[in-house]
Length: 449
Image (cartoon, rainbow, N blue to C red):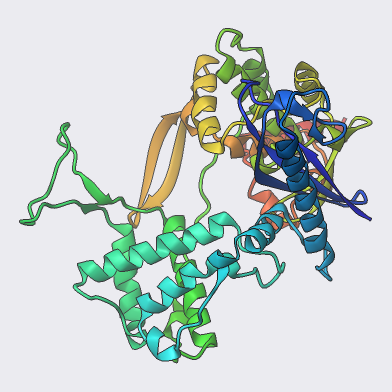
């Protein structure tokens, strides 16, 4: 039977109001979260009764209204959940969307335009983008992720800019042919400089060009072409596009160089003295949790104290709905003990990516790393100090690579990381050729004693 619990996350300034959060559980297999717009002061909140503390001086009507709001939200979550006949692939994003549609129905009134209104490509794509929040993934049945919706918006913006540069207001579906594809790819690959009203190129104070658009990597170009094909497929499905040339548009995909931190570097990071810089100390702890659990950042920040039990962390991954159970590595235990078995105070992914570079720089993780990728249609190699390349995903990549180097079976590591296929998992393994050779030499010593 499903249950809903109300709780709060205490801010660093306890006098500030925070929003009530809700956790829906159904047995041990499903856990969903919702962050409401209902505010409360942490000092007024009773976590046991999930209401305003009885001893707090509070206006009786306001107390009643607040407690009613909390109970009504719990009931709404249960009603929404029970209305779903298939519950295997539900996510917190789905729950947030479903609740928003119930409490803000006017946002979701969709008038289907007539087909004749969508006979132009950009017109159709604008409608597609405006209704993206209502679309579901065909394989999982879940609502599209924010990143997927963002790709559609960005692709639409590039298409509009491309139309403007080619002096078109819009494209006919019959224009979407191989010539269009070649020209659009060329547009995505090249750098475009800003100009003034007279067409004169503009420059920054340091004499570098002011850019309207940078040159995209091969994978970014592929991402936009893939999104365009999805939207054109939808146009074909609803009967406004009869062209088939887009089916032959090639989606670029290039293996890129990514870095990981080996166990020695993780130890250096762990031992770095950051006591006097709290925000970097916290970022370092987040990274250590990522690197010794193999979690995605989006999953790790949602782990609750109740998910940690008997030496393991158990939860469902938000992206894939895969249930994973992760043993607590000694470093993870040390970090959890530091925060009383809760996650460190939350931090945005963007801020984390900035801070962890500062942490790694302070720890002198600065070995030169050569990154080779196709940019603007040209293969380019650039050397960076290692700390500049570290992001939240480096932690997950480090876990997979270090466990692989330790000789753990691939399927065992995949059961922890939640990878569905060996092909997707192996993209995370960043062992250099000389490291592979050393690993084989070590194995030979064991075999041929």
